Length: 256
Image: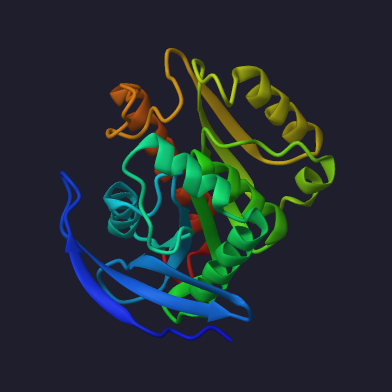
Protein backbone atom coordinates (compact mmCIF):
# COMPACT_ATOMS: atom_id res chain seq x y z
CA UNK A 1 0.00 0.00 0.00
CA UNK A 2 1.31 3.38 -0.94
CA UNK A 3 1.32 5.98 1.79
CA UNK A 4 1.77 9.67 1.19
CA UNK A 5 3.87 10.74 4.16
CA UNK A 6 4.89 14.33 3.63
CA UNK A 7 4.20 17.21 1.27
CA UNK A 8 6.23 20.39 1.07
CA UNK A 9 4.90 22.90 -1.47
CA UNK A 10 7.34 24.75 -3.66
CA UNK A 11 6.67 27.29 -6.38
CA UNK A 12 8.83 27.07 -9.49
CA UNK A 13 8.54 28.89 -12.79
CA UNK A 14 9.13 27.42 -16.22
CA UNK A 15 10.31 30.03 -18.71
CA UNK A 16 7.53 31.08 -21.06
CA UNK A 17 4.86 29.28 -19.05
CA UNK A 18 2.55 29.96 -16.14
CA UNK A 19 3.69 29.13 -12.64
CA UNK A 20 3.32 25.47 -11.72
CA UNK A 21 2.96 24.17 -8.19
CA UNK A 22 5.23 21.31 -7.25
CA UNK A 23 5.45 19.28 -4.07
CA UNK A 24 8.05 17.03 -2.52
CA UNK A 25 6.46 13.74 -1.48
CA UNK A 26 7.60 10.53 0.20
CA UNK A 27 6.04 7.22 -0.71
CA UNK A 28 6.52 3.54 -0.01
CA UNK A 29 5.34 0.28 -1.48
CA UNK A 30 6.53 -2.85 0.24
CA UNK A 31 10.28 -2.45 0.68
CA UNK A 32 10.55 0.32 -1.92
CA UNK A 33 10.81 3.77 -0.36
CA UNK A 34 11.54 6.90 -2.34
CA UNK A 35 11.02 10.65 -2.37
CA UNK A 36 9.90 12.55 -5.41
CA UNK A 37 8.79 15.86 -6.85
CA UNK A 38 5.09 15.90 -7.78
CA UNK A 39 3.55 18.47 -10.13
CA UNK A 40 -0.21 18.55 -10.73
CA UNK A 41 -2.18 20.36 -13.46
CA UNK A 42 -4.44 23.21 -12.48
CA UNK A 43 -8.18 22.56 -12.52
CA UNK A 44 -10.47 19.71 -11.67
CA UNK A 45 -10.89 16.40 -13.45
CA UNK A 46 -8.63 13.48 -14.21
CA UNK A 47 -5.38 13.50 -16.15
CA UNK A 48 -2.81 11.07 -17.55
CA UNK A 49 0.21 10.45 -15.33
CA UNK A 50 3.93 10.49 -16.15
CA UNK A 51 6.84 9.05 -14.18
CA UNK A 52 9.90 11.30 -14.65
CA UNK A 53 13.43 9.86 -14.35
CA UNK A 54 16.38 12.16 -13.79
CA UNK A 55 19.82 12.20 -15.42
CA UNK A 56 22.98 11.11 -13.65
CA UNK A 57 23.08 14.54 -11.96
CA UNK A 58 20.14 13.67 -9.71
CA UNK A 59 16.81 15.36 -9.00
CA UNK A 60 17.94 18.91 -9.71
CA UNK A 61 16.09 22.08 -10.68
CA UNK A 62 16.22 21.32 -14.41
CA UNK A 63 14.40 18.01 -13.92
CA UNK A 64 11.84 19.73 -11.68
CA UNK A 65 11.28 22.29 -14.43
CA UNK A 66 10.58 19.52 -16.95
CA UNK A 67 8.17 18.00 -14.45
CA UNK A 68 6.41 21.34 -14.00
CA UNK A 69 6.21 21.73 -17.77
CA UNK A 70 4.48 18.36 -18.10
CA UNK A 71 1.96 19.44 -15.45
CA UNK A 72 1.37 22.67 -17.37
CA UNK A 73 0.54 20.51 -20.38
CA UNK A 74 -2.03 18.48 -18.45
CA UNK A 75 -0.13 15.56 -16.87
CA UNK A 76 0.21 14.56 -13.22
CA UNK A 77 4.00 14.21 -13.23
CA UNK A 78 6.19 12.58 -10.58
CA UNK A 79 9.99 12.82 -10.68
CA UNK A 80 11.54 10.19 -8.42
CA UNK A 81 14.71 10.92 -6.46
CA UNK A 82 16.89 7.86 -7.04
CA UNK A 83 19.89 9.34 -5.17
CA UNK A 84 18.25 9.88 -1.79
CA UNK A 85 18.48 13.67 -1.85
CA UNK A 86 21.98 13.95 -3.27
CA UNK A 87 22.55 16.11 -6.36
CA UNK A 88 25.81 16.17 -8.32
CA UNK A 89 27.31 19.46 -9.46
CA UNK A 90 30.36 18.00 -11.19
CA UNK A 91 31.02 15.03 -13.45
CA UNK A 92 33.05 13.09 -10.89
CA UNK A 93 30.28 13.18 -8.29
CA UNK A 94 27.66 12.29 -10.89
CA UNK A 95 29.71 9.29 -11.99
CA UNK A 96 30.09 8.17 -8.38
CA UNK A 97 26.38 8.52 -7.63
CA UNK A 98 25.35 6.65 -10.76
CA UNK A 99 27.79 3.81 -10.15
CA UNK A 100 26.61 3.56 -6.55
CA UNK A 101 22.98 3.20 -7.56
CA UNK A 102 21.46 -0.29 -7.55
CA UNK A 103 19.58 -0.57 -10.86
CA UNK A 104 17.17 -3.22 -9.60
CA UNK A 105 16.30 -1.06 -6.58
CA UNK A 106 15.94 1.99 -8.82
CA UNK A 107 13.47 0.19 -11.11
CA UNK A 108 11.52 -0.95 -8.05
CA UNK A 109 11.37 2.64 -6.85
CA UNK A 110 10.11 3.73 -10.25
CA UNK A 111 7.43 1.03 -10.09
CA UNK A 112 6.41 2.38 -6.70
CA UNK A 113 6.12 5.79 -8.32
CA UNK A 114 3.92 4.39 -11.09
CA UNK A 115 1.71 2.67 -8.52
CA UNK A 116 1.50 5.91 -6.55
CA UNK A 117 0.21 7.72 -9.62
CA UNK A 118 -2.31 4.93 -10.30
CA UNK A 119 -3.62 5.28 -6.76
CA UNK A 120 -4.49 8.97 -7.16
CA UNK A 121 -8.08 9.96 -7.84
CA UNK A 122 -6.94 12.65 -10.30
CA UNK A 123 -4.97 10.22 -12.48
CA UNK A 124 -6.35 8.03 -15.25
CA UNK A 125 -4.74 4.78 -14.15
CA UNK A 126 -4.87 3.33 -17.67
CA UNK A 127 -2.95 6.31 -19.09
CA UNK A 128 0.55 6.24 -17.59
CA UNK A 129 3.76 7.24 -19.32
CA UNK A 130 7.43 7.52 -18.41
CA UNK A 131 10.18 9.87 -19.55
CA UNK A 132 13.89 9.97 -18.80
CA UNK A 133 17.14 11.56 -19.98
CA UNK A 134 20.60 10.00 -20.11
CA UNK A 135 20.74 7.48 -17.23
CA UNK A 136 17.04 8.17 -16.77
CA UNK A 137 16.32 7.33 -20.40
CA UNK A 138 17.73 3.85 -19.91
CA UNK A 139 15.78 3.40 -16.69
CA UNK A 140 12.60 4.70 -18.33
CA UNK A 141 12.58 1.98 -20.98
CA UNK A 142 13.42 -0.62 -18.34
CA UNK A 143 10.45 0.47 -16.24
CA UNK A 144 8.25 0.07 -19.32
CA UNK A 145 9.69 -3.43 -19.84
CA UNK A 146 8.61 -4.63 -16.38
CA UNK A 147 5.39 -2.64 -15.92
CA UNK A 148 2.75 -3.51 -18.53
CA UNK A 149 0.64 -0.59 -17.29
CA UNK A 150 3.06 1.91 -18.84
CA UNK A 151 1.45 2.92 -22.14
CA UNK A 152 4.00 5.42 -23.50
CA UNK A 153 7.76 5.54 -22.90
CA UNK A 154 9.97 8.48 -23.90
CA UNK A 155 13.73 8.02 -23.76
CA UNK A 156 16.30 10.70 -24.44
CA UNK A 157 19.75 9.27 -25.30
CA UNK A 158 19.39 6.44 -22.77
CA UNK A 159 20.87 2.94 -23.00
CA UNK A 160 18.56 0.85 -25.22
CA UNK A 161 17.25 -2.57 -24.34
CA UNK A 162 19.25 -5.40 -25.89
CA UNK A 163 17.49 -8.42 -24.36
CA UNK A 164 14.96 -9.81 -26.84
CA UNK A 165 12.72 -11.03 -24.02
CA UNK A 166 12.54 -7.56 -22.48
CA UNK A 167 11.74 -6.03 -25.85
CA UNK A 168 9.06 -8.65 -26.47
CA UNK A 169 7.48 -7.85 -23.12
CA UNK A 170 7.10 -4.13 -23.86
CA UNK A 171 3.48 -3.01 -23.94
CA UNK A 172 4.29 0.67 -24.26
CA UNK A 173 4.64 2.70 -27.41
CA UNK A 174 8.22 4.04 -27.55
CA UNK A 175 9.52 7.47 -28.54
CA UNK A 176 13.28 7.89 -28.72
CA UNK A 177 15.35 11.07 -29.14
CA UNK A 178 19.05 10.48 -29.76
CA UNK A 179 22.10 12.37 -31.00
CA UNK A 180 24.12 11.40 -34.05
CA UNK A 181 27.31 12.60 -32.33
CA UNK A 182 26.71 10.69 -29.09
CA UNK A 183 29.88 8.70 -28.36
CA UNK A 184 28.22 6.48 -25.76
CA UNK A 185 24.75 5.71 -27.09
CA UNK A 186 25.95 5.54 -30.68
CA UNK A 187 23.71 5.69 -33.75
CA UNK A 188 24.54 2.04 -34.50
CA UNK A 189 23.17 1.02 -31.09
CA UNK A 190 20.09 3.14 -31.62
CA UNK A 191 19.40 1.70 -35.08
CA UNK A 192 19.82 -1.84 -33.74
CA UNK A 193 17.29 -1.05 -31.01
CA UNK A 194 14.86 0.42 -33.52
CA UNK A 195 15.19 -2.67 -35.72
CA UNK A 196 14.59 -4.98 -32.75
CA UNK A 197 11.48 -3.03 -31.73
CA UNK A 198 10.03 -3.17 -35.23
CA UNK A 199 10.86 -6.86 -35.57
CA UNK A 200 8.96 -7.52 -32.33
CA UNK A 201 5.96 -5.62 -33.68
CA UNK A 202 6.28 -2.73 -31.23
CA UNK A 203 5.14 0.82 -31.84
CA UNK A 204 8.33 2.87 -32.05
CA UNK A 205 9.29 6.34 -33.27
CA UNK A 206 13.06 6.78 -33.05
CA UNK A 207 14.84 9.93 -34.25
CA UNK A 208 18.58 10.55 -34.45
CA UNK A 209 19.46 14.26 -34.60
CA UNK A 210 22.40 15.20 -36.87
CA UNK A 211 25.10 17.18 -35.12
CA UNK A 212 23.65 16.50 -31.67
CA UNK A 213 25.88 15.00 -28.96
CA UNK A 214 24.86 13.30 -25.73
CA UNK A 215 22.60 15.38 -23.44
CA UNK A 216 21.72 17.76 -26.27
CA UNK A 217 18.33 18.61 -24.69
CA UNK A 218 19.69 20.04 -21.44
CA UNK A 219 20.46 23.75 -21.60
CA UNK A 220 22.81 23.24 -18.62
CA UNK A 221 24.92 20.67 -20.50
CA UNK A 222 28.43 21.36 -19.08
CA UNK A 223 30.20 20.12 -22.22
CA UNK A 224 28.65 22.72 -24.52
CA UNK A 225 26.45 20.10 -26.12
CA UNK A 226 23.08 21.84 -25.89
CA UNK A 227 21.40 22.03 -29.29
CA UNK A 228 18.44 24.37 -29.10
CA UNK A 229 16.71 23.36 -32.33
CA UNK A 230 17.02 19.65 -31.61
CA UNK A 231 15.90 20.14 -28.00
CA UNK A 232 12.78 22.05 -29.05
CA UNK A 233 11.91 19.52 -31.74
CA UNK A 234 12.40 16.59 -29.34
CA UNK A 235 10.16 18.25 -26.73
CA UNK A 236 7.45 18.95 -29.31
CA UNK A 237 7.66 15.32 -30.40
CA UNK A 238 7.32 14.27 -26.77
CA UNK A 239 4.21 16.37 -26.20
CA UNK A 240 2.58 15.19 -29.44
CA UNK A 241 3.39 11.57 -28.57
CA UNK A 242 1.88 11.83 -25.09
CA UNK A 243 -1.14 13.65 -26.46
CA UNK A 244 -1.79 10.79 -28.85
CA UNK A 245 -0.88 7.83 -26.66
CA UNK A 246 -2.11 9.07 -23.27
CA UNK A 247 -4.50 12.00 -23.51
CA UNK A 248 -6.63 11.21 -26.54
CA UNK A 249 -6.51 7.46 -25.93
CA UNK A 250 -7.94 7.87 -22.42
CA UNK A 251 -10.52 10.63 -22.73
CA UNK A 252 -13.59 9.60 -20.68
CA UNK A 253 -16.70 8.77 -22.70
CA UNK A 254 -18.82 11.80 -23.46
CA UNK A 255 -15.84 14.18 -23.45
CA UNK A 256 -13.90 15.53 -26.42
